[in-house]
Length: 267
Image (cartoon, rainbow, N blue to C red; front, top):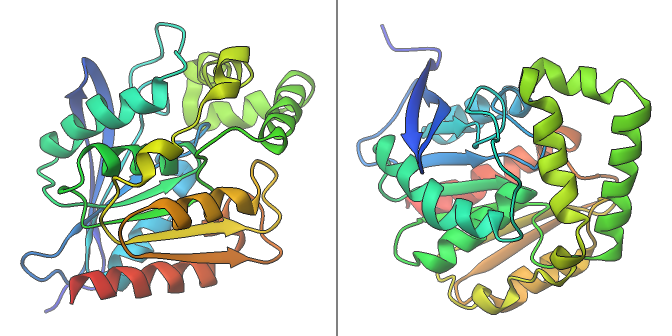
């Protein structure tokens, strides 16, 4: 009898000196040599906050999916120090390569949301021969006023609403350090000058950049900078009526765009 459902298992690995929680999803059908989809979550994200999107995309493309909680998030080690302005670069240059090695992933297709999208771009620039392709959702390559306004609004919600309790369902005792580790560094005066545009030209693999037109954390200028400055083939999808989380807010369109892109890379 053929397999009709994905096989999923949680493991723990060590990367960059930290214990990280990893979900591996094997699709019902997988051809030998198929690429692995590696999901990189947002600044307040975790494995569970992707919901079933990685499983569905893996099944649609017959690809293994690897989803992990970065250091300080979800079920991984809690953050023990203040994040630096270069925390995204550190994640891309040091932690992600060790995650890929520990999970037996050679040439991944990186799928990064928000902070995760920035990490995917930084990795592809530092290691141009490694990724088979990159998909970004709501990635940032520089700091905009709209970004800071959105983060200040999130801080106010964290301090005045039930947002801490809702995030605690995914991050537990890490919730406060996780949130402050994100908001404090983005709102610091030093981070206002953060800009990774100079490295975009080093990205040679095919790329798909997705952004919602109503993203409260970034404008179309982010997608324009990415698509206009990478060296490889670059496609983009600007989704009307969609905010910062396209894979949930415009699931059908995002699933179709990603499936088309991934299927094209496999040919």
